[in-house]
Amino acid sequence: MIGIIAKIRVKPEAAEAFKAQAVALTKTVAKKEPGCVFYDLYSTEDPTLFVALELYHSQADVDAHGASDHVAETMKTVPGMLDGDMESAMQVDIITPTSGVREDRQENTAGSDLLGCVVYFDIKPGQEEAFEAAGADMMAGVHANEPGALFYRLFKSSQPGKYVFMERWASQAALDEHMAGPPHVAAVAERFMACVEGDPDMQVYPIVV
Image 1 (cartoon, rainbow, N blue to C red):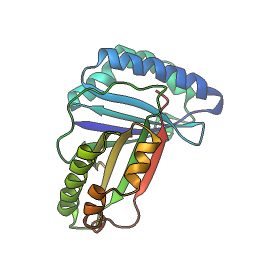
Image 2: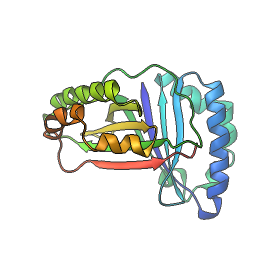
Image 3: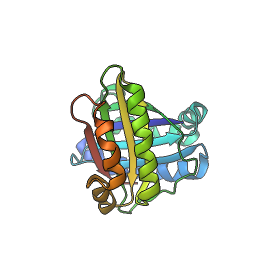
Image 4: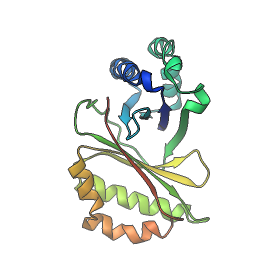
């Protein structure tokens, strides 16, 4: 599977128009792209900054998305909404899972309490294998005990030495319960964090569409 994290900066006067375009595109992707597991747009505290979290079954599905008529139609107007050129206004990270990912296609939950969460980790040299093993145990515990974790998977970032947890939570309450350190998390946390260099970078976003 292939994950994409994209941070998108738009002009202040274009924010609402950009959201409208994103709503239309997301609905079309859900209807026409069976290879896309989810395609979410999230807001941030900055009204001009948006984050897209996307997950595809394969590189072929990523390519099909990029080559689709609906993306081509969207790209007729979106570049003019961006604050700067494409390269400066869009920061994209390509991520690949460290282990199996749930195969079900997840329903779009626009207007819900869904939260997207991205947590970046810098890993100590030589600790990648131990970190992935601890991450697999963490995922197993969360999947077995936390129904509010709609998606919770560890990925390798395209940036050297970085790993990413990409997460979708049903509500703030579900995320709070996870962050409180239930037994299945506490049992792995010390081994997991022993592999990490510095503090994790955790970013939480409310759903737009």
